[in-house]
Amino acid sequence: MVSAITTFTGGQHGRWRIVGNEVVAGEPLHPAERLDVVVGRVGRSSKTPTWLLRGIPSYERYVNRRERAELEASSPPLGRPEATHAALIPITKSPAWWDLPQDERREIFEEQSHHIATGLKYLPAVARRLYHGRDLGEPFDFLTWFEFSPAKAAAFEELVIMLRETREWIYVDREVDIRLVRDPA
Amino acid sequence: MVSAITTFTGGQHGRWRIVGNEVVAGEPLHPAERLDVVVGRVGRSSKTPTWLLRGIPSYERYVNRRERAELEASSPPLGRPEATHAALIPITKSPAWWDLPQDERREIFEEQSHHIATGLKYLPAVARRLYHGRDLGEPFDFLTWFEFSPAKAAAFEELVIMLRETREWIYVDREVDIRLVRDPA
Image (cartoon, rainbow over all chains, first blue to last red; front, side, top):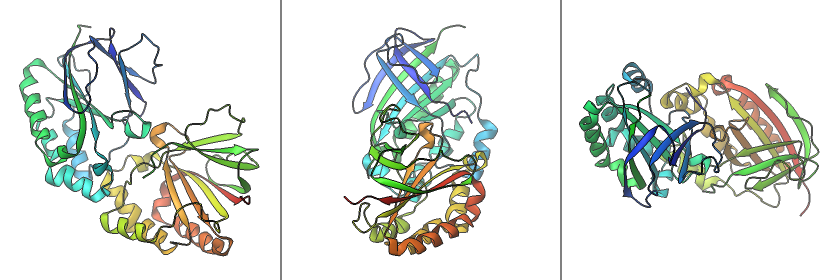
C-alpha cells in the first residue's frame, strides 16, 4: 500500500490536460488548464497552482476479505500506456454520513448501494485509486482517481451514473467532476 | 464531534505534571516534566517542547449503532473537576493490522478482544477520547487519552491490563504509557 500524501494541482502545469470541470454538488473548483499529480506535500507557492488538493491512500474502511480478494485479482495498475483518459472526482460527504456508526455506513455503502460490486464490474477497464483527505483537514473528504483508455470512456460514464443514483450519494454534499487527457510521454 | 487537530506537548510547560513515562513496546518517548494539551496545530518551535504529538478525533471506525448508544449514555465529559489523574497512551499498530480488511479488524477488535465492551465497564469512571494520527503522518497511529479521579486509579489499571492481554494487542508495535496529575485550576 502506498501511504504517502499525494497532491493534485490545477493550474498551468502538469502532464494532464483538463478537458472537463463540472460541479455536481456544492461549490465548484476554479477553471484550470492542466493538472499535475505529485507524491508528497507540495508547497502552496510551487508554480502557483489555481488550486491544490491533497489526500492519502490510507487503509480500507469498508472492504471485507472476499471483496478485497476480488478487487486485487482484477485491479490494474495506474499508468497503463493505453489509459490516456482520467477523471479526478473530489467528494465531500455530509455531517449526517460521518455521524453514522460504522455498521450503518457499510450497510449503505455496499448492501444498499453496491459500491464495491459496481466498481468490480468495470475492472480491469477502469483503474482507480482512492485518496482520503478528511483527517488532513482538506476541503474534500475523498479524491477519487480513475484511468481508462478512450475505448472505455463510455463504460466509465456508466459507472459514474450508476454510483450517483445510489442511496450512498444522498450523503454527498460536494462533488466536482474533472476530466483529463494525458500528454504523450 | 470535535474535529480539530489536537496537539500534546511534552516539555517544561503545561497544566499536567508527568508522573510516569514507561515504554510498553517499541521506541520510548524522551523524559519530560509537564504536558500541555492544545486544540490546533502548534508550531514545533512554540516553547520548544521535548516532543509533540498530534491527532484528530475523527469519526468512529468500528462502533455499531447499539454500541454507540451505550457509549453515549454512559460517557462523561472530559475536564471533570474530580478527574485530576490522566493517562496519555500513544499506540502504533503493525503493518499486518493495517493490511487486514475492515471486517477482520472489527472481528479482532470487538468479537475477539471485547475492546468496546471492556471500556464500557469502566464508564463513567474513566472518561476517554481517541485521537487518530496515522493519516496525518504522525509517529503514532492513535493517541488515547483517559481522565479519572484518584479513587478510580485502580479501576483504570485493571482496564489497561485487560486490554493489553487481548488478541488486538498482538498488533501493537509501539506503545508508551504516560501518567499525569493535573495542577489545581
